[in-house]
Each structure stands twice: as C-alpha cells, then as structure tokens.
Image (cartoon, rainbow, N blue to C red):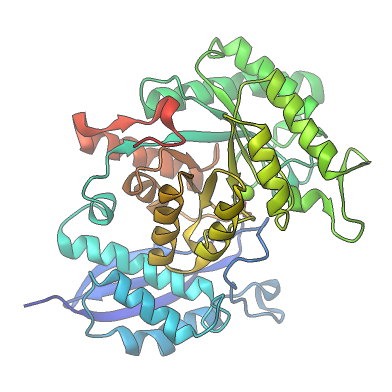
Length: 423
Ligand code: PEP
Ligand code: MG
C-alpha cells in the first residue's frame, strides 16, 4: 500500500543569530519521517518570497508564530493522506493554497519549511539519502567557496563588499580543499591581528573575519598575502559576493565605496582591473539587483569569470529567464527559501543548466543546524557550494559533504576546475 502523510507539525525554533525561525516535522504512516529548519537572509533581494514575521514586541517583531500557524492550521489539513514522495504535486498545492506571486499569503518561510521536510520524508520513505532521492545520478562533490573576509550587512565593519572568498579548485577532493582554506584562514588570522589588533579577528554572520577594512584593494591584498604564504596560490582562485545593492545609493542612483560616488561604468572598470591583477573565479551580484543590462555588459567584458546572480535572480525562474534573454550573469545562486518551494528551486536550476548557466548552492546568513543544502549541492551536481567559514551552522554543511563523499566512494567526483559546469 502506498505511504501517506499522517501528521505535520511546525514549531518556532531559533536560528544562529538568535532570531526565531520555523521548523517543520512530518510523519508518514504514523512514523516520524522528516524535519527541516528554515534559514533566513539579512542581505536579501527585494524579489525574494515574503518571509512572514509576527511584528509587535515579542522577539523584537521577529517572531514566526504566524508562519507556524499557517503550517499547522492551513497547510496541514490539505496534506494529510497525500503521498510523501509526490514532491511536485505537494509543492504545486502549496503555491495554489498561497495564491500569490511571492508567497505573501502563507509566507515563504512556512512553505519552504513544509517543502523541505517533505523532501526528507520522501527520501526516508524511499530508503535513500536525500541527495540520492533527489537525483539518482548525484555524484559531483562541490568546490567550497569559503568567505574568509566579511563585510556588508553581515558584519559591523565598514567594508562595503560582503564576502571575499577562496575557492580551492586545485585540491584533490573536498576535504583537501577544506584543509587549504582553513590553513589560509589561520595565516590570515595572524596577518589581521598584526595589522589591526586582536579585536579585528571577530567574525561576521558567516564566520569570516570582519576587520576594519574598506574598499576592494585592502581586503584583496591581505587575502592574497595569506594565500601566498600558505603555498596554495596555484591551487585556488578568488571569489567575491559584492552584494552591490547594499552599497548602492538608491536615491542618487550611484554606487558608494570609501566615501566616493561611482558610476556603473566605474564599478565595472574596478572589477576589470581586479580580475587583471588576481585570479578571480567568481563574482556574485557585482551590480545592483535591478541592473540586468549592466550585468550583461560585465559578463561579456569578464569572459571566463563566473558572474553569479543572487539578489538579481532570487532563485526564481521568471527573473532567471529575464537574465538569460540578455546574457546577464552566467550562473545563479541557489537558495530554495528565496522562492519558497523545493520544486520551484529545482526547476530554476534545471532552466539555468539548459541555458548554459552554472548553479552555486548557498547558505543564508541566518542558518540553523540543518545541513540539507549540502545534500542539495550534490543532488544538483552543482559543482559549487557557498556555506561560510567557521561556526557550526556553517561547518556542519562541510562535514555532511565529507560524509557524502565517503558514502559515494569511487563514484564521487570533486568538481575542482570544472566548478562552473561540472557535467
Ligand atoms: C548572500 O547574500 O549571498 C547571503 C548568503 O546573505 P543573505 O542570506 O543575508 O542573503
Ligand atoms: Mg549574495
């Protein structure tokens, strides 16, 4: 007899920043079968699915009891009795129940919690690990994008650019790559202490150092010194999440870096110069999120560099299509809670692949101990994952990838230099 969803329960839990978030449990045929925690962004794109927060005084307005109530009272009665492996059907039902373009009714945090928990329940019902349940041909182990210097909205320093990243593309495997990145981080620690004092090695939301730097040259030079000293210079390329919408002056229509106003052309020139000086493999959100045309110009200018759309695309087919039409960026950042269901996010990745774009699976700055994105990065054969540096809600994902590598045995292929299009 086919399995059935017999119970569903959401609760409010706490994320790594101390904000409430949603956790969803699912039971199949009377047995506990799956759990998912919902992550949250801080440097969010304006086209993301709506995150339902309670407002008012409790938890400074950040409570998620409304979203919990949507799961327990609106979604649950519709799901009872359904097949836990019918992911697409259930996700379509969630979209229908919501009835808006951006999950404004149920809340993207309610729908993605249910959708991710269902994926776990479907995997358990099928007797498979999550990555294999999503894709029986899952075998590519991603290159980690480890963001060693943090700025933007994820820190309390004045560094405009959000993430300065190393990508160990020359490593033999993921674990070797992790070793390289953390050895570089140990050296970087000492360089930062030497120049800025010990308070400067406090870390940002994603576990990278948040020193009192500004602009693009100071962090890049410091990072490059650490990389040189590590002996891994030939094995890594640099990455960056510029998160440019957050240093764009929306009123004046200019970018602002180190007190200087910059035009789009000047910002593009800044990246061109940077890429001439350093081996840069990937730049995310180099320009503000409405400038599809500027992203197309930059993508063409920086041939060979991966240009990733995060706030630009918000894992949403509609905006990815808009970008693909004019060649804006050549990769998407993949965050399933930006769109609100697993199926919509998987469809977005599929479309991106068909268009020749890469897919970079990503953490949110507000994470939990849930490691599902590690499984999804392998399921998508994405070849790349961005999931922070230190702090257990980040390293948990790397540790899960180490386990998956072991499980896959000789079938596992480390994406390495092919991170942009591994298959
Ligand atoms: C990002 O911008 O890529 C990021 C991970 O931050 P957030 O989750 O705050 O959007
Ligand atoms: Mg980003």
